[in-house]
Image 1 (cartoon, rainbow, N blue to C red):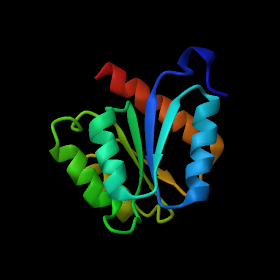
Image 2 (cartoon, rainbow, N blue to C red):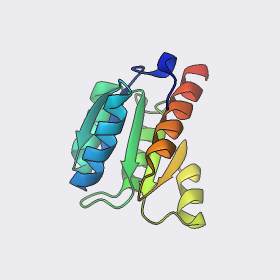
Image 3 (cartoon, rainbow, N blue to C red):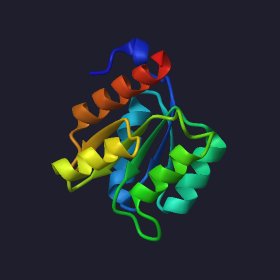
Length: 133
């Protein structure tokens, strides 16, 4: 369970083309009091990140039109997105993908299928780290 003092502390954008994943993440983070915005298309999500200035982005790697790697690069190359914490999300949680995520500037990595507690703890820790730095 996420401690009460950390609940409702952030605006989070989730970018994933899978509707079930979006609904699952949205529900879990909403329960913790976060404002959750979702995008099923990578370009829509990228625009949302730049316009909304979220406290955290959760970004799927495998996306049509523009993959998560490219979206992450655009976020990091935009002055408005350089300090926004980003968690990459993938069903392929191999060392290569995890290393690439960190090399491109991600702040963490989540593996699908998501485990509820792991998601909530990773979000909390990443957001706290973002508040400190």
